[in-house]
Amino acid sequence: MAMNLARSTEPRSEGLVDALREAILTGRYAPGTRLVQDDLAEAFGMSRIPLREALRRLEGEGLVVISPNRGAIVRPLAPKDVVDLYDLRLALEALALRRASERYADLRASTKTRHAQARQAIAARNLTALFRLDRDFHADIAAASDNPHLVAALGAQWSQIMRVMHAYFQAGDYPVDTWDDHEAIADAVAHGEADLAVERMSAHLTGSRDRILASLRGHGDRP
Amino acid sequence: MAMNLARSTEPRSEGLVDALREAILTGRYAPGTRLVQDDLAEAFGMSRIPLREALRRLEGEGLVVISPNRGAIVRPLAPKDVVDLYDLRLALEALALRRASERYADLRASTKTRHAQARQAIAARNLTALFRLDRDFHADIAAASDNPHLVAALGAQWSQIMRVMHAYFQAGDYPVDTWDDHEAIADAVAHGEADLAVERMSAHLTGSRDRILASLRGHGDRP
DNA sequence: CCGGTCTAGATTGTATACAATTTAATGGTG
DNA sequence: CACCATTAAATTGTATACAATCTAGACCGG
Figure 1: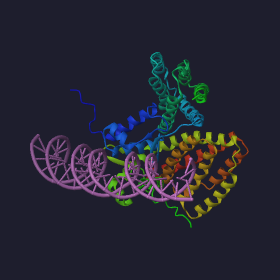
Figure 2: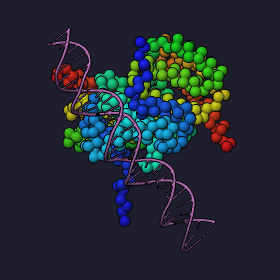
Figure 3: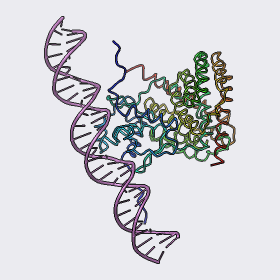
Figure 4: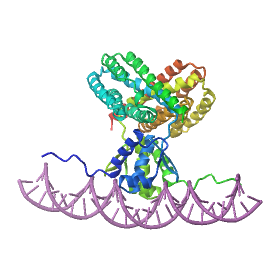
């Protein structure tokens, strides 16, 4: 008989952290949004105790800012954050690529699969699904580095980037050649060519960053 | 009249997070130690509610691991963590050095001051003070990068390194030329020579890492 | 002696209730 | 009208109490 996989013994605050994180990453709770405990507790159907714990958890992850006696807000994002985040991100991705290249990690097949899925997501104008596929590709590289601390750093990193994308991106802004870049990077890694992979990643990220910054300006000028 | 600077309105859990973090970083709560809520609550003179929030915060920072219904422990450390952490750390420090070098940040004076203080700490066999001075030097470099996200990543990074050092280091293991390295790095940054600074940092960190690994082996063999 | 079941104690998870603080609104005063 | 006290409402902070779960040891059949 099939065992019931839904662990009913899981504490309330566990699933809550994931739900809140998801809402923040997808922009449903936009940067700067106040997170009022009573409201959230009612929305999620529990008391404020587990809710407060979830907020502390997310504070530790850098997604939420809590001011004593004043409450919590979704951590704000400024244009400079975009520049700083991409600068940091390139350093982390470069390290991941070097380590993955050393072991000739082969991500070509899974990348091709994701590429196909991404095409569908683009056709369906499903930005959230698109970003998730993007994240999955980069998460695979991180995992291939075999360095859990690097994985964690890139994860925190990516959470912020995800917020940036949902905050500043428009559907039309998604570059069509993103996944060609990804496949080229996967190729370089599979052949152990670390420098080439890093170079390609650098171009990829710079393009992505500049597109976000441009989109930001375009919408920041007129109210 | 001088205003009382001790903000009595500060919530209990604020200072608590700092106290717990300090205890973990200095090894007073060693890796793997169980953190029983009742005991800690009594030790800090408060109920379990603010204590649990502090634990969630530290979970988010990666210092504590919480298992549902089983409780919290100080995050364990394995030898591989030392290798992984230093690998990641070099990438982060290198980025910080490049950004600091671009702006010719001059940390020579403060480094010299810390060097003198470090000599006193060595004489007093005060490892905790010594590590803190070390951290301050690296924190200065991070701050000079003018990238708050990099500062945060290096901070999280350093917390883990601090735990490693307190866990595996012996008083005699502290290398006497650490601060000569630091001054040489500060020199390179002040002259804008990023590559040289990174090279020196690389040597510095490699030496530090290998000393920890050696110390680890030396004590891991015999019980 | 080994493995399994059962129960008591220890420990974690959370709702409720109330205290403390901040925020917003009100009204007076120059 | 601007400015500042005063107060009510909204919101956060935490202690208490109890429910849910896990752990360890006793007990028992093999």
